[in-house]
Image (cartoon, rainbow, N blue to C red; front, top):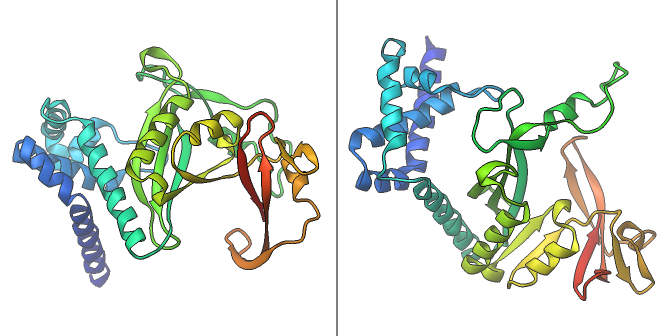
Length: 309
């Protein structure tokens, strides 16, 4: 009985935190929609948190049943449909809500004299057994890549070229400091096929322009190896932004000794500083060194900085 009461208390706490989190969005929706539709929106968020599985989404009919009970599932589904189809609001309302929260987080970090980092994260949404959804394109399956890895005690994993399945590409921006949880700023979906077809660099450029207009050099952008190439560096240097990019070791850069692979530039160099960093995989602290020097991109007159641990 005590365990049941504890679980109920925790569930109510999570529900209260969710309502606090979306309070500003609920107020904005209340100005444009009927109160019943606003309540449907909040109940839908609660149901998604409670019942969504990591490998299985929720059908609209299932979600409607969770809102008002299995016996009245059609009525719940109709409520969701009325909310989703309402012409009095669009996705931009949610996008604006998330961006303003991220902007407040940037302001808080700067007021506390802490660095504000904007991490660019890209992945794909896989829909391997469907072709009916609008805007699907070929995406590299990360799940298939995980299944092909060698497991201890097992052998003969499947090899061959990467597996591509139907899906969508997405890119998101996260604002965070040196501590504390990240804050989602925005998320964009894009496809390479159909009437929504676009190139990878188009959503990247739009987000970079948006960040430059709002934050300028107040934040530091963190980019992975997918951004380590000359065309993107040229695009980034068009705007007053600061960034750190993880450079692919096979790509060439130019230093005092000429053009060579990036990893060869720092090979054999004594680290300029050391620090203990927590290794999450091995569950221990590791002494890590840092070395940096000035280099130039071989194809453009662009100076970038490379740091290697």
